[in-house]
Length: 338
Length: 131
Image (cartoon, rainbow over all chains, first blue to last red; front, side):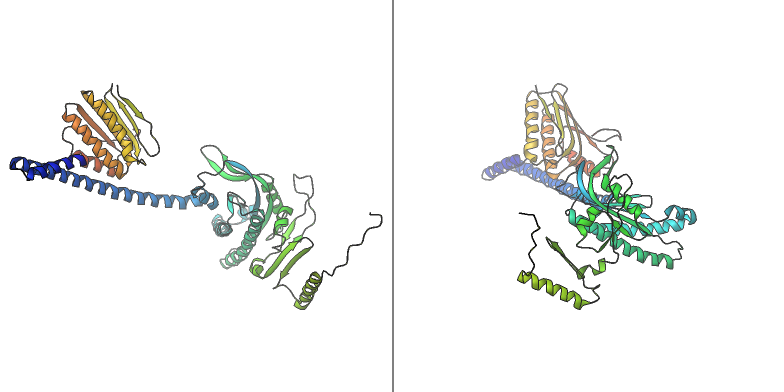
């Protein structure tokens, strides 16, 4: 098209210097026709470009709505992972170290028998909504609601590292406890006679995580001992308490105050295990903690909980003085050793 | 003999030119990285085909999406077909648009106004028609 227009223009220039007015007029008309046609084509391209841009905006709007809706059915961490440009697909299945949280409402079956369905539904909506918010705030993958139970894991599809994942899980559970206390007050004010009480269990260990199901219907979930263990630990927990397994305790013992429980044998396991109850109400004190550990030392100071600060100061000063002077008695050699 | 086939990709349409049957099919989506080069190949193949002075050609176009660069290339392609029609090849262009695709239908209607000799039929795809 452009080449033809150029040729007409060249011819026209030649004709201008000649006396052939008829040919000059015809060439001018042909050039004008070509110009008009190119203008029409340019208009078409602009209209098409605008229409495509409009279509793209509408497609983006639909995509945003779809993503928002999808996030209500699929864990937010999974949706985020699917959207990440460098992660076009989530690995089918993989073995990962997870920290798994499992919670269950105390006496739920009895509640379903004694409460009006509407009242129970209202409690559950409040409960699941608030727990989901807390889960998302801590970056947990909300695997599923199993009836009245909640299964959440940390460590997949994204992991912050074994220790951080465990700390987040415990932090999330403590915040859930605090939210539940607030919710209970609200429920009582609203006239509910049976506010919810919840047991929580956390376990750290290996599990297979990924997409399970059929090609047509997938569910991103975790399967393995850590999941079963979390559920069983939760079963041993007192109402409104949080119990953690030894694997989780090892990761969080410097960050949270725990109380060792009697040795127990979990259902389906040969060896007895130690469980630890995480003291409640630690989150609001968290900034006042001074924690740390290494070979030969472990420090935990909760400034809000120290009743006799002079005692604590004296102890710390003594430790500092002796560490600086290396003022420690040498270990005595045992008799008979070379 | 001019049998030319280009498989579809996520960015380019399926193209098949059959000189025996006298058909050309362009279907899919079109937003190639190098639009000029992509459609230049088809244009060269058509030039070879028209050099054999064929009596007829039935062109089927069904593009569910094409960008501005492809639109320009399509206008040039239709010009090439129109010129061949003016040289006594009976050319019919069936341009299929999806029922809800106003963008393609308006563009096809617009472009058809500049086609002098070839016959341009703008058709709606049936619900079951594959792209």
